[in-house]
Amino acid sequence: MDKLPESLLLEILSRLDNSADVACCRVASKAFNNVFPDLRSIKLLCSWRGTSGSISSSCFKKVFLDFISKLRVVESVCIGLHDATGVDPVDAEFLMEWLPRVSQTLKSLSLSDLPFAKYCHNLAELNLRSARLSLDHLNPMPMLTTLTLECTILQDHHLNQLNKCFPNLQVLELVGITGLKDPKIHLLNLQTCHLTLYSDLSSLTLITPNLITLKIVLCGYHTAIHVEAPTLSLFHLSVDGQKHPAAFTAKKFENLKTLWLDSFYIGFFLSEFPTMKTVETLILDSRNIAPRDATDSKLTLGKVFRVFPNVSSLRINSGAWSELEACLDPQGWDILDGSKGLKTICAYLMLVDPSLTFSYVACLLDQCVGLSVVSLLIHCGVDGTQCKSFMSKCMARWPGLKWRWGVWGKRMKDTWITDLQITEHPKSSKKLRL
Image (cartoon, rainbow, N blue to C red; front, side, top):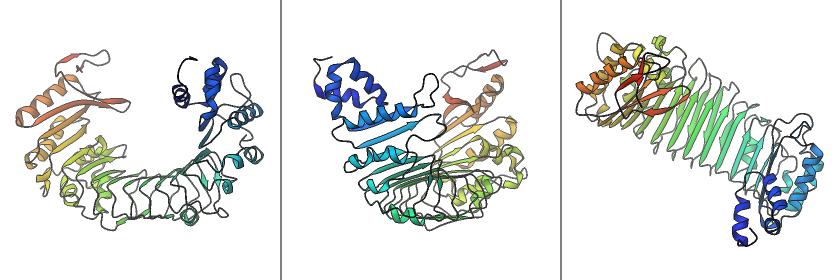
């Protein structure tokens, strides 16, 4: 080990996920100990409750301070506390022992609170979790470009202080945030935004002229969502509630190419959307636990293509497909205006009623004359003989299409079938051989 070049030894240490492993390497090798001060980051992960196999708070502080004091330049600090209870060891006195010294070079900080933000002017990345955070007396941090807040009570009801303190954010993640009331994100440089909000908000507003990627997960309902993001390219909107949002409004999406919609009643959800001619890739899902009974959803393929007339790739997850079947008009087919541009479709099928599912597949494939690739995944619990019969019927009806068949399940990775033969299954009579 002592014969390895110092640059390689330093590279090995820098790839370790936990600085505790770095400490072990220092003890085991003099060569590692000699190069370790040139590391520029510290990531100390521990359980500190004092039980067997864990370390105490005082021991944790001693190890951390010894480590950070020997580094020549510190650019990144991450303190991860697992299963911590009692008093947080990352207290004000502890921070004062090291944060002022490294503040000039520190670019990335991950903690559970921000009591000494005045020492963090040069930060480019900040990750806070499990904190109660107030921004009222925080000076602006113009260098910060990435902010992640997880499981945090944010005492900034409308996000006015967040907009003011972090004006140059490019990446914003608010995950598991509570304490908000009618939040409004107004950040001119923001490019990527992920919001998972647990509060039952009456409104949510985003004014982000340079936003490219947006994911919104709302764990309540009756939320009026307003988005102004003319450069948005990818949008994932998920509403986990038994009602559709009160309203969805958006200034014209001029560049939106990919859209993923996930809602309790996806048909109601689509009614809130204006016509979006730029969307090329569309994913539909439903959170309804009994989607086959969702006749009030009024989800139809006709509605889908009226809202998204130029979609070329469509994925329909199992909940949304079951809503489509529930809303099928037995008196006549849905007229699919705007469906000629569809090139590929992927659908997740329960195959509860194979004849009904085949009827809806026929409704789709007979009218989408531009289709070239059809991918259908059948639930892993469906009888193998029934699967094979359904597959054979489809391929015989539309022999000119390229077919891809697969198996899906809630707790398994999607699996594509390479052999359509049927074989015995220990838990059911038959299954597909993969």
